[in-house]
Length: 385
Ligand code: NZQ
Ligand code: ZN
Image (cartoon, rainbow, N blue to C red; front, side):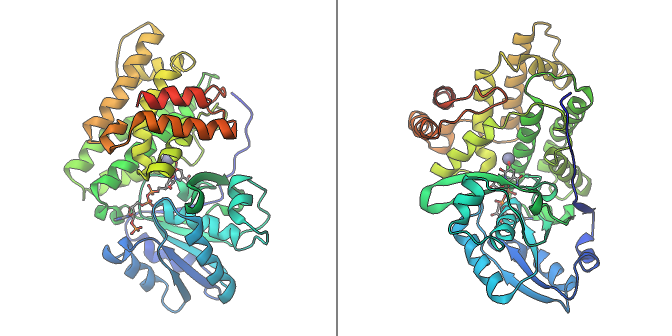
């Protein structure tokens, strides 16, 4: 096991009716900005619940954060914050709203010329950020319990992550009941995103971490069991609760301590979203099976363990078992109705492969736990998607 240094300062308030607890955790003397997305919270009653809980607060609002949050939109919130002297940010929505809020928190305290270039592209150390918290409404990103965010820039077709301890939410409210209103497509995106997060942390090379491996496999096993249940009964509380906790634990960095991590599927998927606008979860479902095939030899031990312990195959030859695991993952996605080919989304594989290869060549990109996924490997992977 590798050395590690772990801290997650986020309080999690989980369960039915938990939005009503907001005032316990936000100082009434602070100017609070509630940040939300395209309006789902107004249709499903979450907005009303938050307003009621924060009655008597000096509450400002900023709506319109889009899926795959845009730098250009976030900077409008920064202007409002500076103008009004906002002191606390409350994200109410999915991972995009929360990620946007994390960026806004950092950009509000940043004095440089181009916050996107400095914070996101060049990853400068963030010295200060506004305090933030969230009411998370979509189980997928794990953003509610981590310090990462992914921000897109319209003017350059970029979609890149940044990370800073300063943007951990102070607390996250997770009420699984708010997910009853999710469109099917977003429920599925969240299941795939969570599955792939776990794979990015589990499926590398073995450094003797049986506990982390078992936790990871436990999350994947739970997703495979709960996914058909949520499709059959979208308002079953226990199913929604189990899926949400899988999503949070899938990327709160608990399973990644002491292990090698991959993240190549995500970085290639981000390019597909940046160029073609497809959903994050969809991009992952397309890339992951082909990337795993491409990297099968170095990942064979972990893939074989997955074949045997998660999918129940008896195959004793690791490389053969690895193939079985990869096929079983893709079958799982397809079984819940997630399509796994670029053509299914009307994207030309050859064109996508060339565009992403050229961009990775220009950036000298090397992805994956061994840096083996370079521009040429990415080209091969995407051509086969
Ligand atoms: O914008 P509104 O109107 O709120 O609607 C949203 C949006 O259209 C809707 N929605 C959210 N909660 C709902 C709901 N509709 C009905 N009922 C609810 N309870 O769902 C749509 C998608 O929302 P979005 O926030 O974009 O989805 P998600 O949570 O999947 O976030 C995706 C973004 O997170 C990034 C992705 O790259 C992408 O930009 N990621 C962030 C990570 C992190 N911070 O750690 C890690 C992930 O790998 C991921 O990359
Ligand atoms: Zn993701």
